[in-house]
Amino acid sequence: MSFTRSYQQAVQFHPEQFNPITLAESAQTRVILACFEPDQFIPVHSPPIDLTLVVLEGEGTLVAGDSRRAIAPGTVAFVPAGEARGIEASSQLVALFTVTPPPTAADHKDVVAGLQQKRQQEQTS
Image (cartoon, rainbow, N blue to C red; front, top):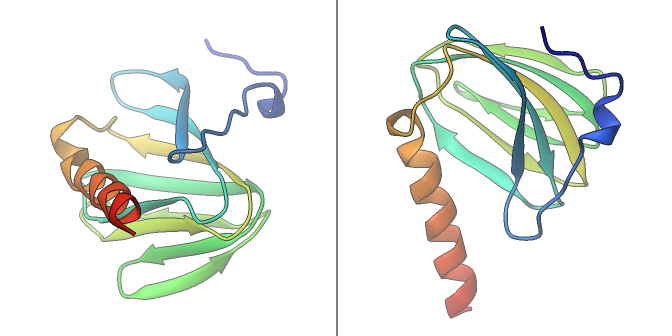
């Protein structure tokens, strides 16, 4: 069993990129507290993983399939495996992600590449 009395005690922001904090994990599921500073993002990608997202704090935009939706505290979204998804924060944003099955490094190679590309663009600007 994993128990967190207050997610707020686990919140940690990083200035370079969003910070995924694993709160619990099994062979079938991972629960992640995702912490974003304004303008931080997860690039659009299409992993073979179901995502359930609950926004706890802040605002941003969720890309899911062909749609872009504003998200705010209380937003609940489900994006099925294989469907494109990405998120960008417009303020400090804290969301709870439940992913099934837990992603592998190969599942997130597009995320890593997108974050590196953004860093390189910022360094040349």
